[in-house]
Amino acid sequence: MYRIKRKFTNNQQVLFVSFYAYLLYSFFVYLEAVLDKCFRWLDRPVKRIFQKDQRYYYGPFNADESAAHNLYKNLRKPQKFFKKIAYGQFVPLPQLIKLSRPTPKDFKISAEARDILDRFKQDGIVILPGYFPEYAKHIMAKYQIDPCKVDFSSQGQGKKIALNSYDAETIKVLADPLIIQIFSGVYGCQPFVREVPVIAMVRPYETQPRTRQMPQNERPGTVGWHYDTANMLSVGILLNDISKEDTRMQIAKKARRKHRVKLTDRFYSDEIIEEHFEIVDCYGPAGTVYLFDPNAPHRRYEVKDSCRVSIYTSYTPGNDIKTLVFPDEKEQRLDISAKDLAHFSDLQKNVFKYITIGNNEFKSQTPSEKQFSAASV
Ligand SMILES: [Fe+2]
Image 1: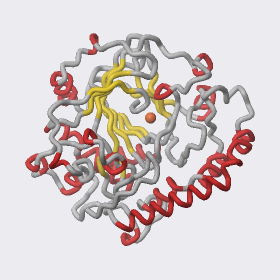
Image 2 (image 1 turned 120 degrees about the vertical axis):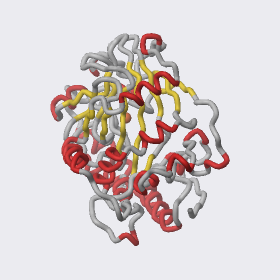
Image 3 (image 1 turned 90 degrees about the vertical axis):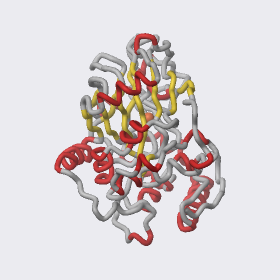
Image 4 (image 1 turned 45 degrees about the vertical axis):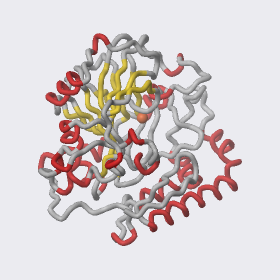
């Protein structure tokens, strides 16, 4: 791997897989800085045009679904859009100038994966009920998690455990053939694990109110309708049984075609979501998996005393990989041994390419626990 260290801002990619990638990113960042300098003053007047109606826009809930405003935001902040093109999304590019990697030669999509892939492309969310029941049991036993004894959490908060210490079952789950075939099919290239999976535990004190009744002077975090970075596909795994009345993730259906970019707005009101989208509730028995595009609006809906324990991770074609963006954070690396990879296909082996960077110097012995707020849904 060709590595160059360069820090543009606090949250920029600082390791590059090739000199070409470095040049491309430098250009995107430069372009965005120039556009910022020249046109930042225009953001607020433009926003006001699209967000007049106080029935929909109030407090921190000021994101809109206007196609014209979205076009403005993409022109004003084109880096994410260009990145998507550079990774071979939107338009086919010759491999020579693409940052993504082709799928291995023997790659085939099974009939089962094809069917789910078609649904995913349409809806941006697919739920596979009870897909990993044994894995759910294994993690709950390994970390001795009892949903009835999880600490109470206040709105949007919770506890997370990074799954970066060695676990052969987690490695199999991350390389699950069905899931990575679907993601390869969506991207049209090799997907990579973007981040160490985390167990997220919540047991809310209160059922969350409608956005109109939420505090209007603070950002709601993960319980507010929001979207995350474009060109990323996520996986949620429920570790305990969740019904439609429990704490659960909700996501807007058929919302992934739009490329959403944030300027100053990120959170939607209930009114905007209900008017524009059909909402899908992500629930099911322990082991249920949901695959979703987090650039579609989604949130965690919290129900009083309803504990949800879940795992969250995501995949990209190579962009926004956490080990590259935060190369100094050792807990972003996954502990894998060569024998785990021996029985995998090339497509499966490749998904770990970035998550193990620098692994030789890092062997995690104990899982790291943290309070979390907005990091996972
Ligand atoms: Fe999110």
